[in-house]
Image 1 (spheres, rainbow, N blue to C red):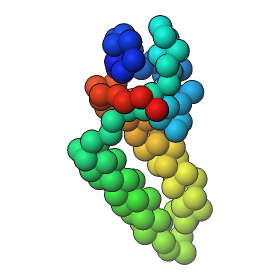
Image 2 (image 1 turned 60 degrees about the vertical axis):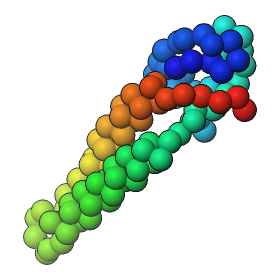
Image 3 (image 1 turned 180 degrees about the vertical axis):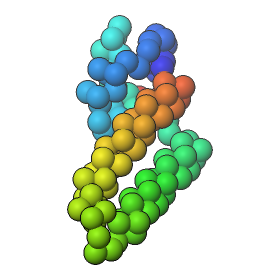
Length: 105
């Protein structure tokens, strides 16, 4: 990641990533606030991943849609799948954001 004001290169650590849920980051050197320039490719990857998450949740809900013992696992399995896929998304998103350009806010 590079600051657009002072051109300092720095790593988007997990702490910085989690402290900027809206995507506004702060340079550790000059304290300037900036946003990442998200490209069309970034948004297409995000939408594709969201479609996979939705498909997985619908698949789990459909697979346990019966009056059997498996139906008791429907909501815990769905919640567990959502948590797992959300964590996977955060890893992917942080990796993508680390490689993006930035622009001042």
